Image (cartoon, rainbow, N blue to C red; front, side, top):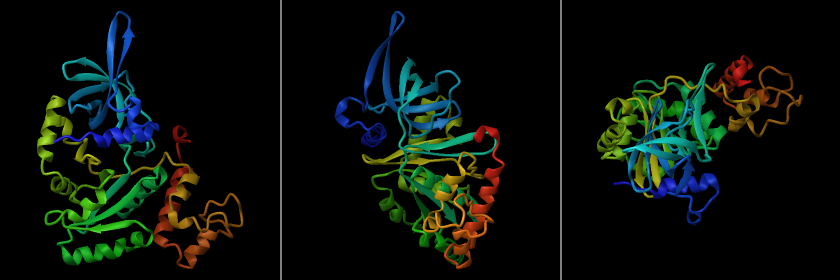
Length: 332
């Protein structure tokens, strides 16, 4: 079953328009030489390389490519497309985004999802999760004003999960929502959290992301097959991001497993602002240009010494700040 209110609502929110002004699901005709091209709005529901599955307001799926060499689209984007053949089209442009979750290293950036309001970072006690990866994802969410939720999956592994919960307690103290569950047994704790959101599921491989998606969407396999057919080959969905509708107001994007999460696109000030526990102390340092790493009279460092800021978090901050010091010219 397809639901379309969700992506229409996202487009309206991002553009500042309402449902009645002709934006959602619109079609326009433009003259190109001696021919008339039909332009339509659609939602990207799968992305792999330069291949995109775009869902129209009538649930039709088109296999689309970006025009020219431009390839900066993501699952969750609302785009303007021009039909170019049977169930095929060309992406002309993207509508304004309300958020964009992406990562960047020294050489390139990788868009994960667009127009999401909630990021679900999945961890598990087995295999051991990468806390640095978790922190980096949380920082990216803070910078984009995306609400972040941490799911501790595989809680049927009682002893290991207890140790993982202790490690994650810090994030609960910082105000992040922690959701313990065993996706194979009961997915309901997460279902409530996802209501009325466009969410993206992120995390390293082996944490049970696919199990969670399959539990939330029993018809996920059929939907994947439908999108594979639209893209002409099943290979396009094995490592791609894919959007599923949960109901008329909610959807979820399943993203490929992460190994790294570069943050080279952030500025120094954005990095500081993304550590929410720093906020009470920033602005109270001896020097106005304090970078909160080694400077004397730093209020943030003093807070670390008083255990008001966890050393794990400050150490992560100083490591990331050092990385940004060596940012290549392309990101400067």
